[in-house]
Image (cartoon, rainbow, N blue to C red; front, side, top):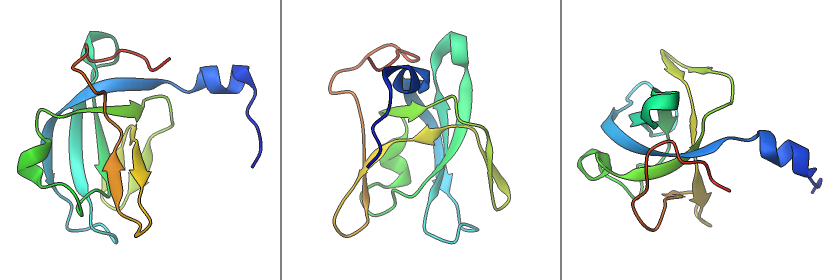
Length: 112
């Protein structure tokens, strides 16, 4: 494992956002959802693909706050353009549990 410098870590913008829309992503190679996430006035709304189908249903995701990296370049995933990286914890079986704030907070708040 390579250690990051403090300056490298500071460049990563991990922000709180609220999922405003979720839908199945049938074209994805690995089961995934398409998410729309509101990061507040400064950053706005971004879209992401997330492989979280093992632990979450579409209906459970809308309104959920998450933590995402908002300063990666956009990434084409099949017919979908992902604009941020939703973070999560990979379980032993490969499934992902979302990284979330443990209390509600303003959208766009930066992880320190």
